[in-house]
Image 1 (tube, rainbow, N blue to C red):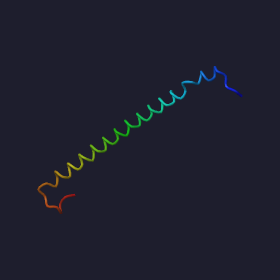
Image 2: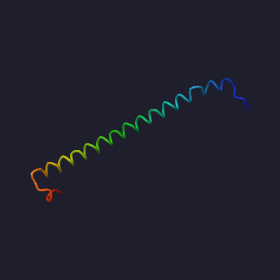
Image 3: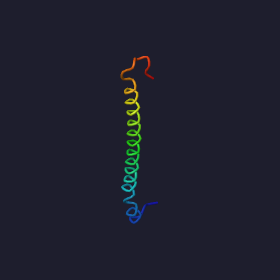
Image 4: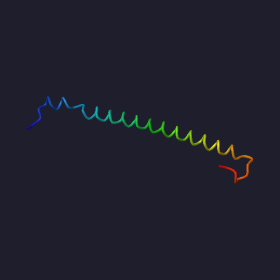
Length: 64
């Protein structure tokens, strides 16, 4: 079962296309992870700011 020259030529670009698809998928996953991290960090930062601002001028025992 030897592959003919035509079959080899037909499959010549398959690896490049598969690699490009894999790179695009990884890029989209990276963007999604960055958005999730950025949103989580901003939410946590605003909660910390709120807690710090509510504790200023109060005794340490009355801070939530």
